Image (cartoon, rainbow, N blue to C red; front, side):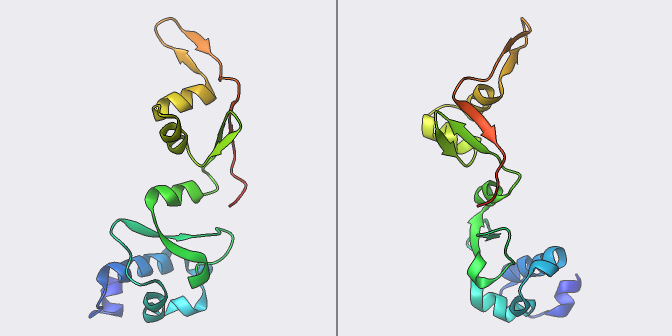
Length: 139
């Protein structure tokens, strides 16, 4: 409600609320130009439907040069918490990307790389050779 009092007749409410959320949660990481909504909107425009503001390089601040509108899936793949999946020497940004590329289910990729236990017998199957999961070190 406070954001409505700040700019009650905003022309682009959806973009304004994304901007207000950004300032509320990441203010110290936002460039000084973007503290003004009109300048933020001039730089980024309106987001496409179901897109979020993502940084190209997570180590740099939110700014025109370092931001773009991305899908939630792309945003998750860019985060440092998202591991790199390596299958037969090829790197994938996510288990979903690996599964799509190989034509199998995502759970199949996860079982191949992490290993699994077959519940009825309790037999443990180790990870498949040539499959590994590595922490992301940055983009």
